[in-house]
Every structure is written in C-alpha cells, then in structure tokens.
Image 1 (cartoon, rainbow, N blue to C red):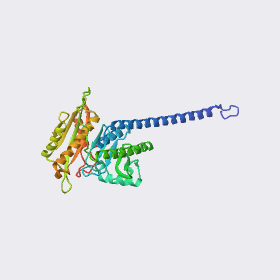
Image 2 (cartoon, helix red, strand yellow):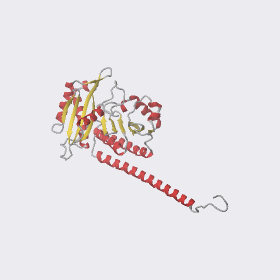
Image 3 (cartoon, rainbow, N blue to C red):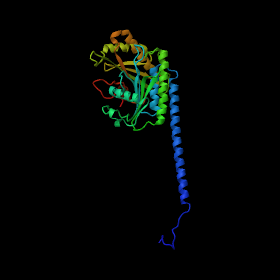
Image 4 (cartoon, rainbow, N blue to C red):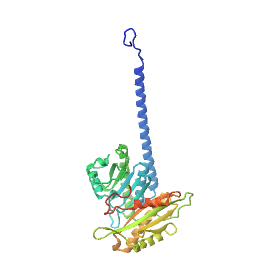
Length: 360
C-alpha cells in the first residue's frame, strides 16, 4: 500500500543532513577524547620525570640513582617490570650495577649479584643480540610469539617487552628493559620517552663514575637518625652471601664469616638500625621510621661496608658476592609478609635452579 501511487511514502527531507551532522559530532568527540588521553599521558610522563629528578638531584651514588629510576618507571610510566643492567666498570674493584623491579600486588626493587636478566643467561644473550640487530630500541609485542624465547620461562609480568641500549661514547654500557603483562602495551609515545630516559641514565652514569672514580662503594652520605614522625612504619633488609668453588658451584659462607660481616654492620648502624641473624646464613637489618630516600642511603652504606670488609680480608674473600632485598611496611602491615617479600626479591638465581628469579 505504501508503494501504491495514490499513497506516496512519507520521507524526512532533513534525515540525511541530521545523520551527517551526527557523524561529524561523533568524530569530533572521538578526536577530542584522543587528544585529552594523549595530554593526560604526556602530563603523567612529565610528572614522572619531575619526581625522578627531584629524588636524584642531590644523590651522587649511582646505586641509589638506579633504584630511584626503577621506582619511577614502575610507578609513573606504568611498567610492571624494569631491569637496569650495566657492564663492568674500569676499575678492578668495581662491580656492575644489576637491579630488577616489579609492580604487581606490591612494588619492590632488588639489587643482586647475578649477572643475568630474569636469572636466565640465555634470555640475556638472545635479548642483547636482538637489540644489536635492531640497531637501537627493540620492541616485542608478544614474547610468546617469538621463537627465540621458547626456552625462557617468563614471569607473569612480562608479555610485551622493550629493550633500549644505554650508549655512552658510541659504546653500549648497559641495558634498560621494561615489561608488561599485556601484549602490545608499549606504543610510540612510550618509546620516545624511554629513549630520553636511556640518554639521561647514560649521562648520569658518566657524571657519577667521573666523580666517584668508578667505585660502587664511594662516599655514601653520613647517616642521620630518622626524623620523628607520626606514621609507624619500618623497613627490613635481607642479606645473604655466596661464593663459588673451583668448579663454579655456588656455596654459602660459614656462620663465623657471616658474623664477622655482621659485626662490621653493627658498628656502621649503631643507634640507627638493628642487625640480626636469620637461619645462620642470612642477616636482617631493621630500620624504624625511615623514608624511601633514607632507606636507599642505608642500603648504600650496607654495600660500602661490605666492600670495606672484603678489602680487610685480602684476596681470599674477593670472590664473595652479597644479595640484598628490602621491603617497606606501614605499622598495620603484617611483619611476616614484609619479611617474605624482602626475602623473595633477595633470592638469587642459582645454577641448580635455572628458572627466573623470585620476582614473579
């Protein structure tokens, strides 16, 4: 009946114009939303850089600088895994900086003596080779689609991956590795910011090694008692020590040797922290009411005190390495959980356990 000539179908003469206007409005809204999202992302990046610079501008210890940078990457750049790995310095007594940080249920950063990323020398070798072949930044959208990584057991915080070489005088001095549990997470905006960050790290590495003579135990700031604050919080640092026999197997130190290190630490932290034994082969250092910055200063003192102890022992103790993990807790947090986290991030990847370190 509607198609009959005597009853023409009613049409809206402005329907097409209204549809066109609606499409234009929707496209405009989408464009504004994308611009606002990019603006928020860029402001977050700038805020992260500002916080990082504020935290490191008065620090001349490269260990502390790296810890602050890793903390910033995990908190402000929203990565879930961060690793900073440096090569050996020029001096004979220097050891490379090697740290890993994870942001999952809670955030933590660890220093360790293991020279491999994720506790896998094979993974580090493949990653380094792929980075050299890419001639710069290496971005992997999904590690499970890369056949080179078939033998690597990745922790849950690594699905997408980005690796940037830290270049100084046209030579690589280290690597910055970031991971996230979502595939294809890192975009071009992340890459641009991370390239700036890698250049900044290279510049800081150059400044601190020139100032401190390329020594990891150089001139930590004098310790001061923590300020009196209302918040009841504490920090736990877990230490263990290892050596390698003539066959390259990892061995732990005897209790008397560890007690010698403990006595050295007690003198360094008298009236400021408590140094205790744990299970005869580990040491606990407990600080009450210290901020993150003060804790990093105390960690620098722990490392410098350990290097001083090694120098006093002579050549026979030069092969000993120290693994260090720490965790901070508010007063209402469970002590056993804080100790468990500090122990997990301290645990090295031993040859008998070729899987990833306990940061997963």
